[in-house]
Every structure is written in structure tokens, then in C-alpha cells.
Length: 600
Image (tube, rainbow, N blue to C red):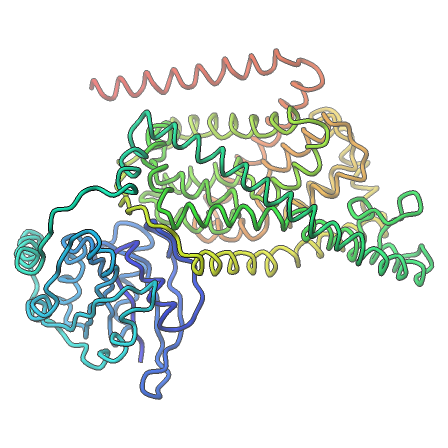
């Protein structure tokens, strides 16, 4: 038997799925978290029943890829659990009536029941059950309330009493049902609801947004540096280094096996950053330099997600995103990309048109560095001063904006208006935050560390075989002319396809100047996504568009690297003035074009 969990986005389907199956999935307080179906199993009266969490959909007439997946799954379900938001019954019942009209065995899970009561919403459940003709179970899934009753009533799932209707008839039926079963009592706005209003007003919204981003940065830095200083560094220096030193002595202090496992000794000592051994740099970089910031970033991101702040950022940035051919919802993939590009690439599926997906994929892959990469940039370039770090991220922002303006003008089509559900602010539960953090950290350990170790292995084999010297000599004229970099930096670009944080680590032993580190970091950020992101984008865009994106990446990387080299080593401020004039002209053209369209 297969049970499908179907419902509107952001009604708590993933939470119900986790409660039913024990499967750990990430849920958030904004629509579109689930973009692919997820399977799990439920023990129902001794039988093993398959449960599938279907992507959220407002209707059975799909308007995006995620809704297409949801509709395609329907014929494969024996029972459908329709998860409905009790705080927004009128909107949710449209999909319920569509499901009933399909005559599938159905049961309604009336989720967020506790929140509806807090808002003064009273729903007559027995009457709703009678009008729909299917079982209705009130629940608060995040606390596990009602889950047992839902499982107990699954055998009662049946086809409802509503037959096929036109769209107008269905909306009329929804209104009639809501008038009969729902009553809303008067109450005053809570503090959180007042904060919700302030978050989307133009003036207070941007002030609050700036405050949120500033606090997020401070918290990430505080937690990350704290973990490094009080946990990671002491563990590696006091406990791990003595073990490696003994192993180094046992291996004779040199030779291919020593170089592979321990790496090169720097001034007779193991250098965790520069030695480039699998057991030294291969473990120190991901665990002591990147992991602490990953923990801090995902903790802050998880809080903002579950609190419900991200959709409000979508509203605030809707105007800017339209300038680059997107609408405000595209800010969510960009923010997710700051953590890891893979879930960001998946979330782009929720955008409506192929044009939007192409632009969002290109901008995210080129100009949004993941946090592993960001942590390495701070570790590598940060000691030389904040201005150098700032130049990297300012260049990336300029690349993002310039490329977005150009793509918006060159690609045919239009950007639809922003239609996004704004969820209420909810205080996140500690247990849910901890589970989400655990899942994301698990993903980091499963996906990142093997690639990092593989990257270190490839570097050592390249050195041992002499390939790196051939590559360096071949690339030296090109790298020197455009980027002002030595040919040895080519191996870092080559490895960037596996992991960009590893590639940045490869730059450490090259004794580059701060200016060269800025250029190399910029080119590495722009030129290509990591392998995992590339495969996701390939699946979403197809070969033809992925080839176009790849071409744009290579040309952009050449331009961004050359610009950084000119700005730092030859033209100085003049390069930035020229870039500012170019960007201003593009913005002026975009504004003029918009005015013409509006007056036409």
C-alpha cells in the first residue's frame, strides 16, 4: 500500500511525514521546502506501508515543476492524506475539493490546530467532515498531537461527496463550507504579528533587514571563532599533532607514502594548512577551518527559516530581483546558496518559467559562494586585512548585478509577479532546529569530506607524477597575462570542480601576495560550480542550457579575474570607477526600458 501526503506548500506536510515514518527531512516556515518527493515507511497494524511526501501544490493544474511532480504522483497512491492548514482553511479547501473530485480514498489532516485556536479561529470538525464526506483529524504535528488518531483512522479513508465542478463552482463551494464550519473571534494583535507588519513595510522592513543581517554575521562569527578557539584548535594541536608526528617519524619523514599521508614538512614541522597530506590538511581544513562556520551558519539559517523571515525578504527584494529578470522568491535560492549550492539549485525548481530558472541558476552558480568557500576565503585572505576580503565580495556582487541586468535584457520572455505565501512568525522549537542542523551537518560530512580527501589525493598524485609542473608551464603565460598569477595556480582551478574550499587550500603553499590571493579567490568563486551542483543544474536545465551557462561562467571568470588583477595591480581606483560607470549605465538602460514598457 502507498500513502501520499498532499497539500498546499508550507502546511507542515514534511513534519507529518517525519512523525509518521521517523524519516528525518528538512522542513521550514516558508513555501517550497519540498521540491522532490521523499519516501518513508509506516507500520500500520503490522503491515509495512510506504508513505510518500509529495511536493506542495496549490492546485492539481500545475504551474511549476514541483507541482508537476505532485500531480504525477497521484495515480500511484492508494490513500491520500490531505494536510490542511487550519489557520487558512479557505485557501486550502480548493485543493481538497479537487482531490475529492478525483474520487481517491482521502483523509484530511487538519494541521496547525493549536495555532488556529491561538488566533481565535474555531472550526466545527464534525460538520466539516459531514460536508466533505471524508474523515477529518485535527492535529498539531510539530508536537505530535493527533498523529495517533490520524493513523487509527487511516482505514476510514474514502471518496468524498463532492463531484467534479468548474473553477467558479469550486470557489463557491469553498466559501459555502467555510461559512458553515468556521468562526473567527475578535482579538488584539500579538507582538509577533506587529513585527510581521513592520518587516514588510518599505522603511522599517529594510532597517529590520539590515539589523537581521548584521546580527546574523556577528553570531556566525562569534560561534565559529568560539568553536575554533576552544574546541577544534586544541583538539588538533594537543591530541592529533603528536599522533601525526609519530606517524611521520615512523614513515621516515619523506618519501611517496609520507607525502601522500602526512604531506611535505614545512621547516621540519607538519603544517596543517600547507603540508597537503590526506591525514593533515585533508582533515584539518574541513574539520577545524570550515566545519565551525558551517555549524554557525546553518544554526542561524535554520532559525530564520523556521521563524518565517525569509519570505519577507522576498517581498523586500522583489523590486531589485525584477531588475535582473527574477522576482522576489529567487532571493531564497540565493540565501540557501550561501550555505550550500546544492539545495539552492534544487529550490530554483519552484520558479515558474524556464527563463527565470536559467537566470537564477547562472547567477547562483557564478556569484554566490557556499559557506565552505567563504570560510576558506576568510581564513586565507582575512589575515591580510578586511579590505582584501571586501574586494572579493564586492566584485562578486557587481558580477551578480551586471550579469543579471545583461541576461534580463538579452533573454526573451518576461518575469511574472511575485505570488508567495507569507507565513506567520513562529518561534522555532529547539528540537526541530537541532534536527535540521544535524541533517545539514550530516550532509556536509557525507558530501564534502570525501571530495576534500579525493582532492588532496589528486594533488599529491599530480605532484608525484610531474603533471602539475607540466600544467603550470602550459598555463603560466595565460595566467600571468590575464590574472597576474603563477602557473602553479592552475591546479587549484582544476580542483575547484571537485571542491572549491579544497582549491582555495591549495593556494596556501604557493606563497601568493595578498593581491594574487584576491584574484585567485575571485576566479575560483566565479569560474565553475562544484561537481555536485553541476550535476543538479544539468538535471534541471538540460545539456543545451547547461552548455550555455558553462560558456557564460568561463567568460565571466576571465572578465572578473582580469578586472581584479587590473584593479589591484595596475589601475587601482580607476578600474572601480570604470566598473561603476558601466554598472550605472546598465541600470539607467533598465530603468528607461521599464518606463517605456509602462507607458506603452
